[in-house]
Length: 185
Image (cartoon, rainbow, N blue to C red; front, side, top):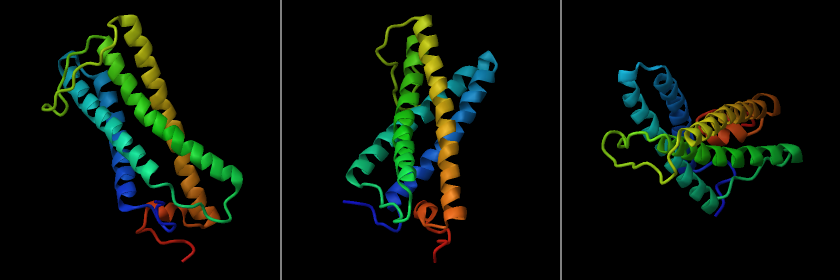
């Protein structure tokens, strides 16, 4: 069952914008965690882990929704290279939004991080990975690299959406922001 040609479904839109907010929030929490005084670090770690695992779960839900509800069709006049880049960007997002939280969780688990419950209430045990500082540092480095890749892909995604709206004047951005005026009427 394909999404409507004119826009994404309400479920897709809500998942998209919820993930956007959570990604920016978690980047903030991660920065606070790294800069925190030792007494505050555990609280920020718990918040960062909670939001990160929420991003992981919502990304899996979004991927499942996407598999069951394929993307709306591209505009007829969209170039082939743009179609390929658009699909590659979306697929890369799924890999990064699933991989980065898993690597962060695995890094914390390998570093013997305390088993902090999600949002202070939901049990979230460490992953069954071998413990060791070298492994924790390697996984943590990969986690940070994937987060930086998320920023790069996000910038490409935003630039593409703005290009479609202001230069191509097509409905691509309107499909994810239905309250935005469609440039083609």
